[in-house]
Amino acid sequence: MALMCGAVGPTCAGTFQTITIDGDTSDWAGIAPAYTDEDGVNNPSGVDFQNVYLANDANYLYIRFTLMQPADAITPGNTYIWLDNDNNPATGFQPFGNPNFGSSLMIIGDQAYQEAGGGFNEGTLTDANVAYGAAAIPGTDFEFRIARSVTGVSGAFAGVPLLDNSTIE
Image 1 (cartoon, rainbow, N blue to C red):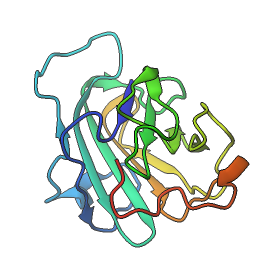
Image 2: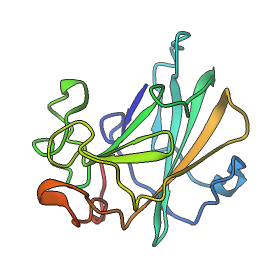
Image 3: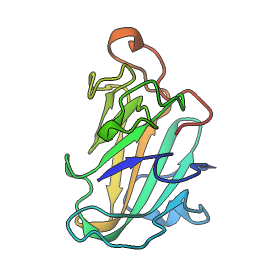
Image 4: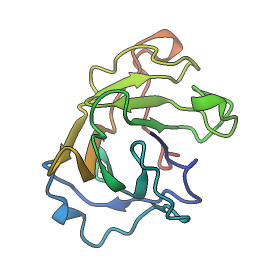
């Protein structure tokens, strides 16, 4: 399943808060969902998002999501998280050919990859400091973090900050 923040809902405002990525989501208390599955239809064949929460502090962007049913959202290939740093759909990779979204980077499992140049996986982002947590796998509640200081590794984006804007789609 894909999570394209901005493409999944009308807003993706986060809350300034430090989150510990450990599978215990009690530190997310008081943070409202940035996205909720409006139709409530369960996709029994895979990862199906119910709610998505966003937070950040000076160092990290935090993403928490809940699922409609227990699944393994951590295993590579089950969940892709795409982030658009410049809110410009004409730049970056367009997942599933979506002309309304241009990904600067992608998270799969505990790895992040550059996509700012328009290609799928233009290189591993070695300074992304990605971490994830879940109380149980399969489960229904997952949390991730990625360093806000992450920089590109290839092409015109080598050394360029990929999450430096105040609004990230």
